Image (cartoon, rainbow, N blue to C red; front, top):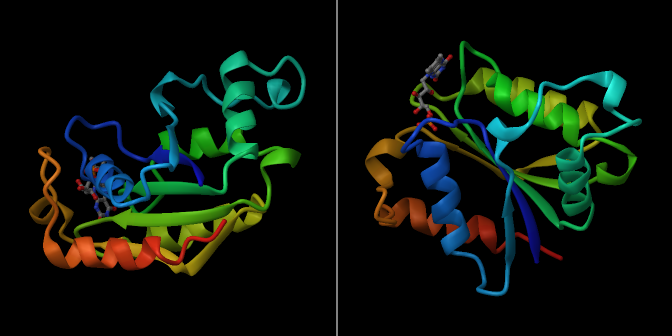
Length: 168
Ligand SMILES: Cc1cc2nc3c(=O)[nH]c(=O)nc-3n(C[C@H](O)[C@H](O)[C@H](O)COP(=O)(O)O)c2cc1C
């Protein structure tokens, strides 16, 4: 199984990042996991969407094309999608990357209902495939995950359950 992961927070010690690490640690050892460093991407520019595509973007699109899933973990910022994530998604989408299944983790102390709604709509508009069965909202990530890799048992079980729904 091959995965492309996107983290909507570049904060050091981000709960979204810890969540991605936790999920990754629970997948089969042979899983190929590629993380996109969203802060390394230029601002999205439609003039280079199809022509003179930046090398890094072309590389990421190629990895996406051959991936089975896009895995996203993100906080909600001001009731919306963090700009850095939206920027990455705008670059990512092209003919070859459409119809990819998306695993979505919303990491929000207040429920993240807005980012869930807007991001799901954006992903569908981009012809990506989020689904209820591969979406999880984590309300208290900070108390359930640590930098040393330890995971609260209930969260761990929920992540394992979700990972068992992945099919290639
Ligand atoms: C600029 C900013 C705006 C935020 N807006 C929201 C919000 O609208 N809803 C919410 O639930 N949390 C909001 N938060 C709190 C984040 O959801 C919370 O800090 C989260 O843990 C950040 O994720 P991270 O640990 O992956 O960085 C906001 C945080 C920041 C920095």
